[in-house]
Length: 54
Image (cartoon, rainbow, N blue to C red):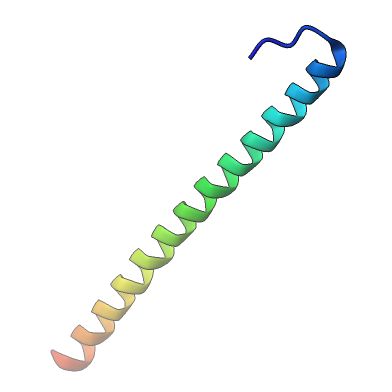
């Protein structure tokens, strides 16, 4: 993307900021989801082992 005018530059800057924000949000959401899933799975497994196999 080539921005020749100052107005286009400001638009490109805002676009890049919005893109980076959306990417960081999606990455953080996916990471938090995967971490929460793994933690819940490990906790449920340990609890089931503790109660089922004393």
